[in-house]
Image 1 (cartoon, protein in one colour):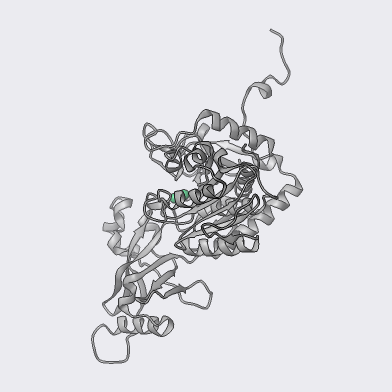
Image 2 (image 1 turned 135 degrees about the vertical axis):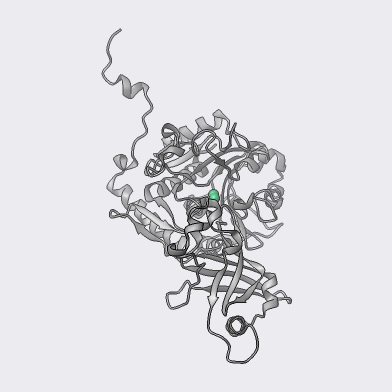
Amino acid sequence: MEEKKDYRAELFYEPRNGYDGLSPAGREAMDAYCEQYKRYLDSSRTEREAVRNAVSLAEEAGFVEFRPGMELAPGSKIYCSNRGKALMLAIIGRRPLAEGAVITAAHVDCPRLDLKQLPLYEDSELAFFKTHYYGGIKKYQWTAIPLELHGTVVLKDGEAIDVVIGRDKDEPVFTVSDLLPHLAGEQMSKKLGEAVKGEALNLLIGSAPYADEGKDRVKLAAMAILNSRYGITEADLISAELYAVPAFDVRDLGLDRSLIGGYGHDDRVCAFAELRALFDIEGAPARTAVCILADKEETGSDGVSGMKSAAFEWFMRKLCLADGSELDDCFAHSVCISADVTAAFDPNYPDVSEKRNAARLNYGVGLHKFTGARGKSGTNDAPAELVARMRRILDENGVQWQMCELGKVDQGGGGTVAMYMGNRNIDTIDAGVPVLSMHAPYEVVAKYDCYMTYKTMLAAYTSLD
Ligand code: MN
Ligand code: MN
């Protein structure tokens, strides 16, 4: 057999580090994009804030609030807030919805410590809020770090009061205390998952007593401050959604500034990529472009604002009505990119990953054919035909991508909103940014991968036909 010179290059698939193909202009575009993302993430600490900030960006980009029955034409830009906690946006395409939409679906809720409905108490002349953690957290990571308080208190008359304490540098922060090592012998001998109990995640909020004689003077002082600042009483906390979230700023990370450290990359990094790509579509796309920022992914996508909610059908059916399409025809011909983060290979913990199929930082957007656990349980397994379409459009649009899997077989697993879209008869594939320290109070992503995820969303909107 005749020996060919570049036989390996011709026959083998060899992923490469994205920086090897990054031009100076590409790097400039990447940095500019990441600065925008950092600003969005820094000011979006809850799903409500992420939605509010997305709405103001959308309005700047010419989107208007959707009203059922309003006139829609190719190029119309609309958004629809689902109770202020999730958001659906669309640009109407030139083709009828019966021929399918291109849907990108990310989530904007993140692991955090929610305040209980009766949170406030005093113990040993210190005031605390009881919390109930939200999403999959390693509890020990949430002690002994600065935390901010964000959320909404709704009064009996319906008035909603937004609460943010600790974001501005001159405001106080909060914390959950941890044991000193000197007295932690027993704690340190426990399993990591049992060393900090859920009921020990109590937020320290004050220590100075109210100047009177009665009991619970520190609790009274804390409530008096909340009352003077927000006009609320203890009973109003019952109808509140208040979260303690990490008080870390979003910062460049690494000597070379190639990484971004911050709270909530999962999954606001993909949410922002979707938004930015949607805004960058020129004119009316062939297919209607739909962008979803869902809530409740971290708790299983249930509830009115989660991806299983019929709010999605409601919105899509209204769009279909406008051009005389049937919703089931629309779904049958639609494609969905489930835009969620994946686990980046971590050299500190190599044993949990299978190197050939693990996402690597700086290798571009991570595609998942499937997620789930064990024998692919609880998965959307994207059809090979859809994977092939993605390979084609990403290559044609100069997007660097990598195929990956979350951890070794039987190591664990995880899911996204993909299966809930697949269950609706929508061809769906997962694509997102690889993350280090996922679900920790401080997560890390690579700028290159953030930018490639944005380019993936733009390629999907404009090239999936
Ligand atoms: Mn996620
Ligand atoms: Mn997550």
